[in-house]
Every structure is written in C-alpha cells, then in structure tokens.
Image 1 (cartoon, rainbow, N blue to C red):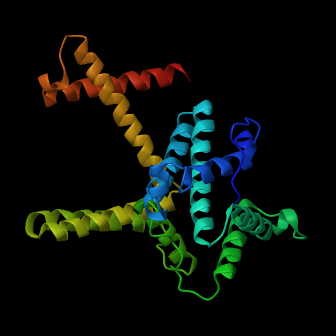
Image 2: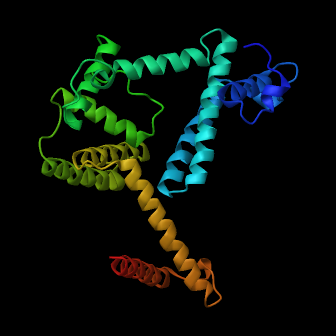
Image 3: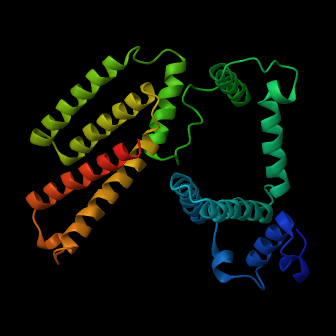
Length: 276
C-alpha cells in the first residue's frame, strides 16, 4: 500500500481507507511506532482474542456505545493482521474482503442464488455445514476445529463434528449418567492418584459437561460468563453489606459471608419477582 497523505489520515470521513493508512503509518519502519513495528502475527493474536471477548462483554451488558468502540478495536485487529500479511507478501485487506464476500455468497445460495428460502433454520444450518465440508475437501472428521478456540467452545465443536457421523449419546439422561461416572472417577483420583491424573480426570468431567450443554442447547461459554457475573454481583453485595458495619471480607468469616450471600440471593429473587 503506497504511503498515505496526512490529509487522509486526519480526515474524520476517511472510512476504511483512512484506517488502512493509519495502520500502514504505524508499521512504517522509518516513521512508525516502535511497538507496532515490533509485533508479528503471534504477538498480536492474543489481543485479537481479547478484543472479541470485549465485544461479547459489551453485548452482554447491552452497552451500545461501548459496543461501537469494541467493534472498532476488533476491526483494527483485522486491519493489523492484514497489514502484516501484505508486508510479508501473503495477501492484503482487499483479498480478505473479497474472500469473505465470496464465501458468504457461496454459502447462502438461498439468498444470492437460485435455491429456495423455504427451509427451516435447522435445515439451513445443515446445508451450511455441508457447504463447509465440501470446501474443506476430503478430510478427517475433526479436522479444521481451531486449536486456538477457548477450550469449552472447542469441546462443543469437536462433539458436534463427531455427532454428525453418529458418535453421540442419543439421550440427555445418558450424558448425565456419564457426568456422575466422571465425577466419581475424579474423587477417586483425588484420593489415590497423582496431580497429573487428577487434572486428566477433571478435564474428562469438563468435556462431558460441555457435551451436556450441547444436548441442552446451552452455550457453555455464555452460561459460565453469566455465572461469573452472578458471582461477582453477589460477592460485591457481600462487600457492601459488610461495609455498612465498617468491615471488609477479610475481617469476616465463612459463616457470616455465607449468610450474606443467601441474603443477596434472596434480594435478587425478590427484585425479579417484583419486575414480573
């Protein structure tokens, strides 16, 4: 990408070309930012993941101004990777845009082609997966499930792939029974085996819990985020209640904090009931 003028870089209406120009200037070996120049794909990848989670967090909180900002941060990550790829001669941002545009058109023949739109969401999902499989070509069932995904999310994706070829429990009851079995094995490992074996058994239990989430059509990442938020909210209520009597959690004990937790929980239920 040729050097951009300062006029474009400082033009508030410059749009995507302006953002590309800013990124190119940041990476310019002679005049750019030392930190940006020093980065590569591997060092930027964690920031990309973090920005995606911050987008999800803004949505969870229904923080729409925050979402605008976080989407900008996430877009910047794409531009950053594309700039590095262009410098290395791999591809540029136009290639990225063309690739995703072609993919979306190809995967939506019921919108952009001649296929009928008179299909259920489930059938369209099945068709989408079939198109993805055709794009991948001959491959093993679990190929292409990204290693960099959060572990719970990757577990669900692996299980979905296996289920498509019939490797799945037919009922939720069987999954629950497997959870009980894995929990018993974890207790046994805790009492008799090494820490490495305890870790392995704990992983097995989490994997089956992810499978139960899939059977219940629950997103385990979203469910755990909600549980984290609930824990944070209730524990902060404990802090507030202790502060009312001039104390902090470390000046309390488990019995008192447990009672305050129950109070915070009851208050939440009362608020929900009042709101209908």
